[in-house]
Length: 280
Image 1 (cartoon, rainbow, N blue to C red):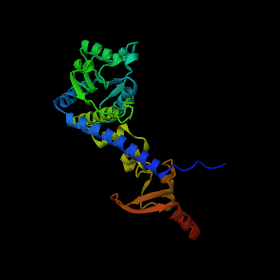
Image 2 (image 1 turned 90 degrees about the horizontal axis):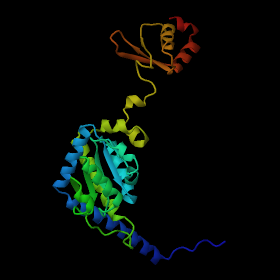
Image 3 (image 1 turned 180 degrees about the vertical axis):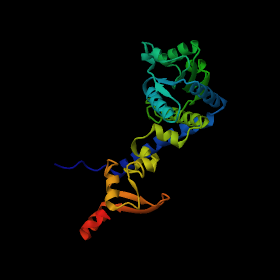
Image 4 (image 1 turned 90 degrees about the vertical axis):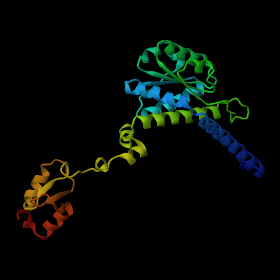
């Protein structure tokens, strides 16, 4: 069977140029969002800081692609010291409002600012006195009007050539969410040690894990420490009482300073050379 013919060089070049334009369009959307940052952004940080400090949770909500972006923002907030959860706006109207408490705040996402389910959720919670922060294209949208602080994405050109699939707009919303989470984390005094406690898994967790926690044997815990004046037999008996067999023991002098390490290999060589050595 003939292999699929390779694409012409011109077609490959066209596709690479198309992909670069998509990335450039999304980069422009993020740059536009950065340029639009103003006092409302700082007000949003103030509001969410107040929520966290009074033991509230940041509830993130959006429909469709905005909902997926919201889930990532909620995860980022939570990993950076700001308790957060994602609530589907349609499910909220069917009982999940019960998951939201008076001390919580809503971070609502809708690029148009007119998504009925998101606007209805924001209006309901605002009427109940909850803090509402919006990420949307325009402050004068229905969502923007019911929010205490609005982060404007702006009217960005989607990377999609049909101008239909949310691409640039969702990238900008995600970047705004990251900027919000990072600024809030800085305000809260979040540290690398705090992050490690929330992220023990994966390569990040291993990188942040203290060396002592990575050690299988720790001196004084499960690695026996014996007085150098003990006989070999006495030292082995004391080491055996520790339970686990680390394969070595640490010998210290009368002041607790390290004087040597005695391993299983040392023991074998000693007994082979002098079977009576255990008694001395």
